[in-house]
Image 1 (cartoon, one colour):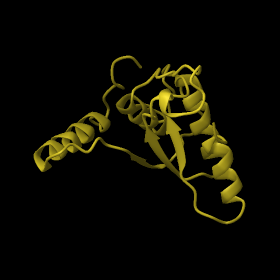
Image 2 (cartoon, helix red, strand yellow; image 1 turned 180 degrees about the horizontal axis):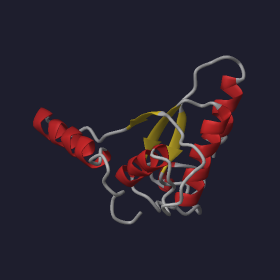
Image 3 (cartoon, one colour; image 1 turned 135 degrees about the horizontal axis):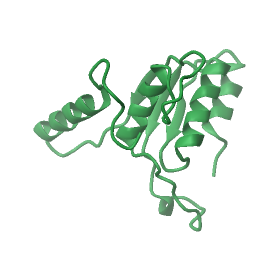
Image 4 (spheres, helix red, strand yellow; image 1 turned 90 degrees about the vertical axis):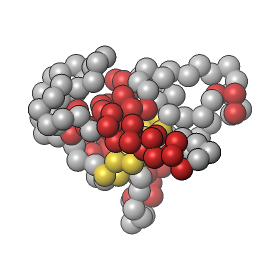
Length: 137
């Protein structure tokens, strides 16, 4: 268990440091993820890194339950949806957040598999202009 990424980012930002907000699929449902992202925008956190999250078994709170309401690619699409001025329910926002967005990828054993993983990530995280969000949104 650690301090929330948003709290840590704000503390560091107040000391003049550049910050990156980590948003984790494992720990929050779609409502909480969207809330954290909107709060980050309001607090001036410019960069987010989307991650799936490690298995709970790797930590010290083994009774905790993972959330995983959204998968990693769905989270990336959700960030794009927010940046288009809508939430995941399709409700228009008053403004739209702007982030520099990063993520993690699985690193397979060979170069061809890595290229395929990166191509799939790029394809799935960049919907065509004017298209609807991915299924489930």
